[in-house]
Length: 329
Image (cartoon, rainbow, N blue to C red; front, side, top):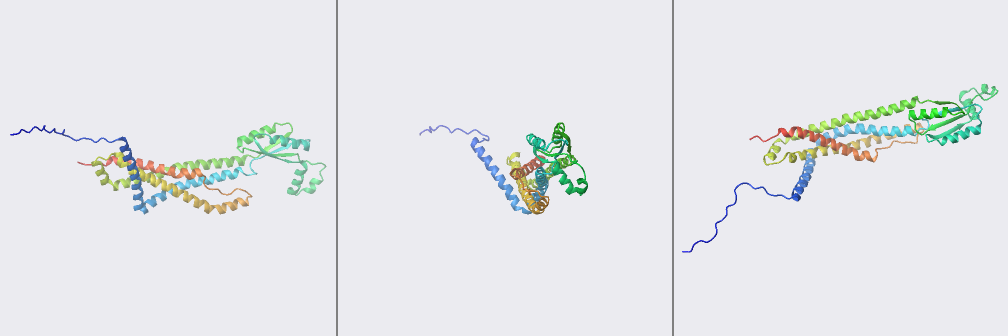
């Protein structure tokens, strides 16, 4: 009888084993889940268009208001810079200053780095202008001599009140100058109004940005509550918080980004609607400017800024409510 000479089978070690996954496979899975999360967020917005549109519209209106006001402030700042009637110095020379010396001083002051241009008004020109504007031509004709001094109108490059006042002091100290007058009160008021407008836009932007974050927080919170059972199942089978969190983050970003794009559309429509009346008003004031739209940086930054606010709101909502959903055994 032949004996069985086969070696005994070795028993496999008992217990669970973890499969080794390469870094490339993990990167592929991570990228795949990001893509699936993006498509899932877009798909859920498409399956509930009314709710998504309402949320996007609220975000768009909240962002369009400060962004539109900022565009109008930029236009106002550009228009006021181009006014010829902006702050200027009326420099009265002494009566005995010759016309040749008056023109030489004007050419000399043109070379100052703070002076944009000068305008010479001789004594004869000043007298003729005064006659035509005052209506006292007969009285002036009876005077033995022209009482009006030679005048040089100086237009500064920088209309900031401090810069204009410094130029006034510089010219007032010259020996040929009798008096340098400057009406800077309206310039101060203009700069104060523009600065106040800029600060109001900043405060409005911060307040409405917070409102956008809260809107997204509430939207994502409702989405988490509606998918509570799905989240529980994912956690039971080993899904991490990051795996569960990712689709909601993409939802917040997509809603915010769509709100920023819609805000650009609303601003463009508003500027188109206001363009005609504003251009007509500028034409009546003999201004060469016209209403300009948003600059390219605003077009690029606003949707990204809005998307970041949506991402922040989604992160806050998920961090607050996701930990409350745990499997119960």
